[in-house]
Image (cartoon, rainbow, N blue to C red; front, side):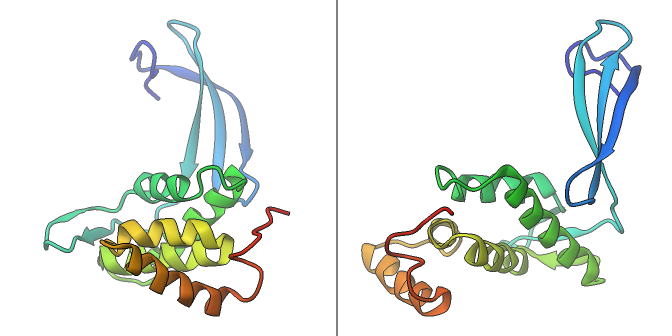
Length: 162
C-alpha cells in the first residue's frame, strides 16, 4: 500500500479489525520509509459496475461520491458517521445485487433518497433539493408535504435526534 505522505510503496499493517457493520476491514498501517501511520479500508467488490449518467456519459461506480453526498445532506443533523456508512454500504449492496453491469445514476439517486428518508427527513429534503433540482421555494414546499405523508407525524416539525 502506497504511503499517502511520502508515496513510498511499502507499509506494514499494525492492526486489522472489521468495521462495526462487518462490510469492510479497517487496517492501521505504518510506512516503512517515513514512519507515518494511516488507515485503509478493504471492501468486497462483487463486480465492476458502470454508472450511466443522465447525459449518457458512463463512469465507474464510486462509493465515495455517495458517501460525500449523504454526508453533505446529513451535515449538522446529529447523525453518526457509522449511520452514514451503513446507508452507503446498503446502497452499494443494492447496486451490486441488481446483477447489472450498468446502473443509471437515477436508480442510485433513488436508493440514496430512500435511505435518507428512513434516516432523517431534513437530510432527505436536502438531498432531494439537489438531486431533483428544485428551482423555486414552491418545489420545496410541495416536496416537504409529501415527506410529512411518508415519514409520519413528528418527523418534520420538532425533529429530535434521539
